[in-house]
Image (cartoon, rainbow, N blue to C red; front, side, top):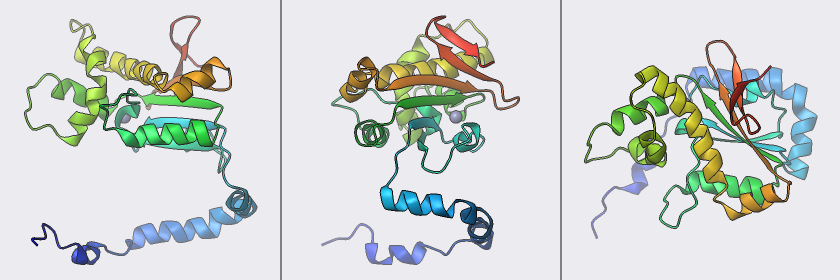
Length: 223
Ligand SMILES: [Zn+2]
């Protein structure tokens, strides 16, 4: 038998945490954990009961816990490139996000799902590079962003690039909300008014926040 990769040796490649990361954990244990010790113990015993699922971008500049002032155990957070939700489809291979949504909605019974997008999103910018070229060997990022391809194609290409990026950042949030409703367990709970879904966009530079207002049919400033 030919071994493609000797799996017995893979643990040799795993190194201890760097001193910097270790120090962060020591500091957290010493300064942060004691403040919430009882809460952690309680959540450990009784399990989590988050009220809200947040689907945000992986971007290091986006901090959903900070933005929503998350108490420990309050928000179930899933992050991926460009805060996308794949459509529920038999041919989809994007199980990670779908599994997280299923768990939050069916098992944790969250009351809200928030799609959190942001300005200067690298995933959104990448759509313009990928979809305007004819790459034969697609990267994982490009394959993932295919979720947004129909939305990208519907953009008004006469606008300037930065304006189109801003529009796509918000259209991507709406696309995620649309795709959320392709999951029968989401649709059912929304129709029963036991689950509400929301779209939020954060401008990184000045903390201005917009949310989708279904009465006005557009994103409006949070005031
Ligand atoms: Zn992003």
